[in-house]
Length: 152
Image (cartoon, rainbow, N blue to C red; front, side, top):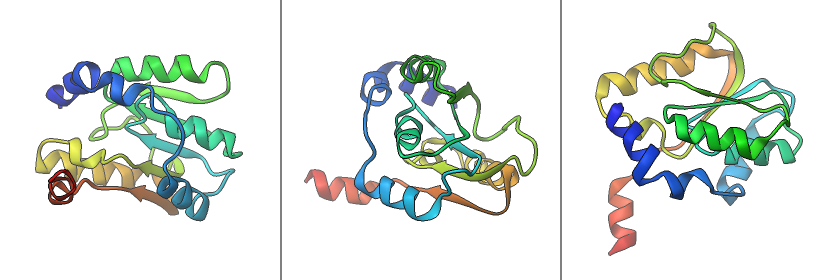
């Protein structure tokens, strides 16, 4: 986990901290499956891009967390005083009460960045634990084989 915090606080910081706008597939999934009034948590929020854009679409009650403190600082600066909440948290051990959220967003391959099998399993368990019964979670995963094919 500490290695990934270092990567996203330093090496990948500029790439991920200042991204803007939703990708077409993100916007589609968010608008199709999530409720604008639902209490929402985003894992791996980075610079807050997804939540900031969701707010522009009329979503309310939005919170995000990331393991990299520098990312959270950027998210807070970018969001200003617009009601979004950002915290430094570890996806494998979340402080939130059971059934705290109606919907959760785990896009941008957050699970794939957890380095060990037990950590990934714990992140899934935590996502399930904090979600209310009947809620929705959006996940995305990184396919290294696809990336290699696209590069070559």
